[in-house]
Amino acid sequence: MKAIITGVNGQLGKALLATRPDGWTCVAMDRTALDLSDASAIARVVEAERPDLVLNAAAYTAVDRAESEADLAHAINVGAPAAFAKALAGTSGRLVQVSTDFVFDGSSGRGYRPDDARNPQSVYGASKAAGEDAAGDAAIVVRTSWVYAAGGANFVRTMLRLMRERDELRVVADQIGSPTWATGLAQTLWGLAAKDQPGIYHHRDAGVASWYDFAVAIAEEAVTLGLLARIPSIVPIATADYPTPAKRPSFSVLDVSATRALLGDAHVHWRTNLKTMLKEEKALG
Image (cartoon, rainbow, N blue to C red; front, side, top):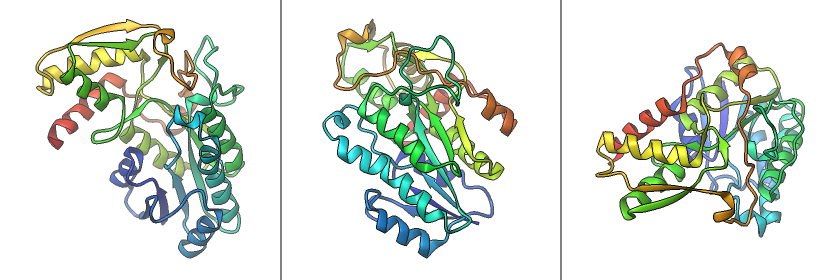
């Protein structure tokens, strides 16, 4: 079996390679090997490789910059899944498209289910919602949230750096969601690919948190592991106190019950996965 993995230099791409099941050959594609805004290049790669699976882990993810780079965000986040879907229509290959909690507006009083109405509030969210549609009915679409991994560019590593540099941090406390360890997400993507049932699925770690809760946990676990010498003052603030170009959903917890039932696997709490990631981060030096 052969899979094309895009975004292999990103944290999810690396996790997908690391968790590759036995029997799979992976064609690793970074941005130099494949321009995801070039539909003809995507068509040529699919025709040449004839993959059984395309795991599209690459995306335009600069949420705030997307507000001023809408064309580029849509070219990658919509154009790529559309091109892969078109190219794979002539083969027996399956597309796995990774999406985001940003397709929702944050107004729900419960976890968002896969069939809930979307209402993105940002250019990034709108581009990912359009990317879901572009992937088509034959694709496996997996929404996730707050992804992080050792060695990646993410909230955890940003917090570790700032906690070393500053005595006080101000962190938003009124945006609620769920952290997601990239390794767990990768395992779910491979698991759903093995089930080969197209549709929309959700994946996140168990439990919920605000960004403030997440930051406090990062500090506590990092001190325990010796990654930090001390815990700085962490002050909870409102979203209004930290304005950004793009609007974030105030509540973006994803209901993952259907995914867990299909895969029959354990749902690991985000704090447990955070500990594992920080141990990996320490091992990286």
